[in-house]
Each structure stands twice: as C-alpha cells, then as structure tokens.
Length: 272
Figure 1 (cartoon, rainbow, N blue to C red):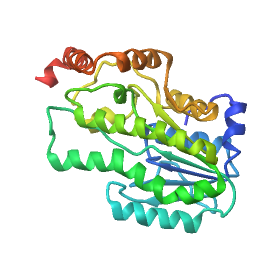
Figure 2 (spheres, rainbow, N blue to C red):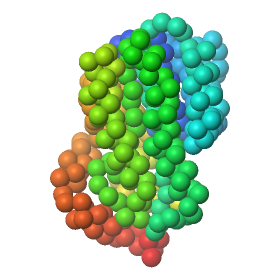
Figure 3 (cartoon, helix red, strand yellow):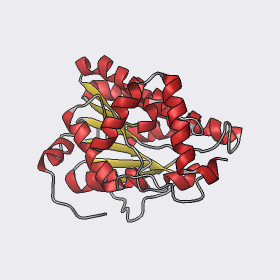
Figure 4 (spheres, rainbow, N blue to C red):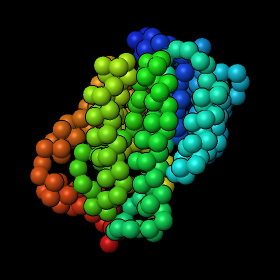
C-alpha cells in the first residue's frame, strides 16, 4: 500500500463507523480501500468478504476475512449470517459492495455460464447482501457504498452485459439513497473509469488497452471522498466525471455506436 499523507476529513468520516464490511478486498480497488480503512479507522471492526485472503492481511479480533464466492446465493446467506454473529452489536455500519468482474467480446463471450455468473456477482449479490444486512443498517445507521462503473452511464457494445450490470447497480444505489436517507442510511454509487488493476486481464483482454486510467490508490481515495461527502453518485477523477455527464445525456443508440467505435479503435486487433 502506497504511503500518503493522512486525509483528516476522510479519517474522521471512517472513524464514525463501528463496523466496516467490504466485498472483494483481496485485490485492485478493493485492496486499496481496505488499506485506507485499516489506516484511517484502526479501532473499527473490519470484515473482508472475498474468495482469497488479501495479501498482507492479518486477522485478529477486529480484522476478519470471510472466504466466499458471492455469485452463489447460498454463500451470500452464509456470509450475512456470519457477519451478524461476528460484528459488534452497536455502532454505525459501512457496507462496501465492491466485488465484481467484467467480460469482453460479442455476447455471450466468453460463454453463457460466465456471463450469467457476472450478472449474479455484479448485480444480484449487492442487492442480496445489502438486503440481508438492511435491518441492522436501519437499526444502527450507516452507509452502503456500491462500486459501479463509468460504463454504467451508457450501453457499451462488446462489454454489453458488464455495462448493463453496472447501470443496474448505479440506478439501484441512487434510488436506495433516496429511500434510506430519511431513515439514517445513505447510499453512494462510486463509478470508476479505467483503473490500473487486473480487471482488464480478467475481462479477457490479451494486451494492454492503451486506455488512460487512475491508480487503484487514487480511485480508492476518490471513492472515500465521495462517501464522506454523501454524494448519491460520483465518477472518480475529473475527466471521468465529465465523460460520464456527457455520455449519460446522449441518446442511447448514439452512445452505443460511439462506444463501439472507440473500443474497436483502441483494440482493433482484439475486437475483430
């Protein structure tokens, strides 16, 4: 984890939570977020839910790793029950739904089971886990942060299902914020653009994309500021905010055509 100056306002925000739960904290943006949470809120109970234990993670009374594949509904139920048993009984809760993956290619590439698992992990799992913990959130107060994507602002051919899952997550999160804010629970949709993580390799790109992007640490810091500021939605990075604002206002058919051409220009040898 890169060493950076302490952001006092963000630290104060994170220290307002007695419990922090993050999914997908083993790598990428999730690991960067997890590092900030450990640094800024050392007294909080922090739980990470992912298939593999984060590198450098040390479990203890206030640091727990719950191994799970959240694309499986039964695993979400098991994790929710374990969290209710393990986490402190009092204090505000921060739930960060970060787990997800992408896929690249003409639908349903690479195959239909992979695509359906992506829908389960990116869209169903955040709703399921949030719903399972919703009574505790309402009783104790807190926040749900959903890591969506800049891709959620428009249709994206050749990543059609991925972008659609993130559009679902973005809209669901903003609606949840409107429902919950009067009851003591805020919801924030964080929308990263390209980030220097293993995402593109996992999505099936065989070569560097050439797309500009943030570091995972910069993205995590922007995400935490969005949570701190209580933004219902925010793209990370100024250029991404501008791009998201423009693409969201284009007619969807135009946005899809422009998006496809942009991808094929960048990755022509892969797209054909």
